[in-house]
Length: 156
Image (cartoon, rainbow, N blue to C red; front, side, top):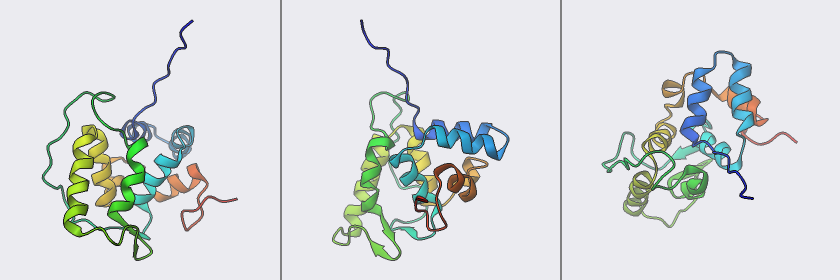
């Protein structure tokens, strides 16, 4: 007997759910239900002031992947590990040997591999626009949902 697969929502779909619910407790619940290393790291990259993006502000020139969500592209749940290419943490670049031209080229390739929604999400993280795009997606909601302290670390 074939095992039924359950659909795992893309990160932008999770944040759309957060956006649609009204109360903080519901927002926390939605994020908590989808808690993963990948989601925490993506959101931390857009919320933690210690994380600095080593890329210019704004939307880079890239060709959006217009394949329907869930098909023909990569997912942030897998690609989140490559975010080290684009950030510094507490002023220390995660990949100091990566030159800026290569960093920007890799970022464009990342965006082109993601669905439109996930590409927009990572751009919102880079430009610190999460709360503008996903109303109610705040530092406090993330801290409560993921049990983060003020340094965005898990509370033991």
